[in-house]
Image 1: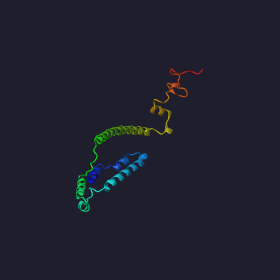
Image 2: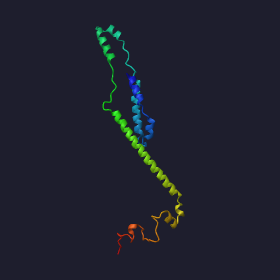
Image 3: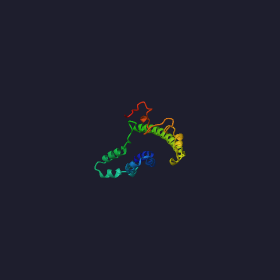
Image 4: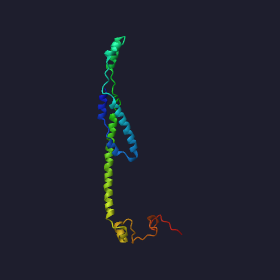
Length: 175
């Protein structure tokens, strides 16, 4: 009886190392508690005998005033079978399908992040190839950053913000 359950439990063993690698550090205590409960349940199943204990019904037949009572008990005991719960709503299949969908989304997200990481590394390489800030001259700055550098052909006034310049149509003179 219990051997079928142990085989099912062994087949659905949890990969705790994989979970530990994925779980955020803030939730490691929760994972530890869940693993402890899981281990308690598994140990309880393994502590049960694989089959029902044998009962010597012959000795009971000799002791009881009505020996047919022992026969009835023996029939009932041998007919006893505890069914393994069935998944009527196919919840396990639904969970596996949901897991596959989440895995696909995760792989797509990881691929997207890998592209972002690659572009960020490229940007960092470009930044690291620039001269040091204390070596920059105004000419070098205008060469490397033409969009933000001050243009001598278009002088600006302090605070050098585009919306604060006289060339801006929304600019208001303070009188």
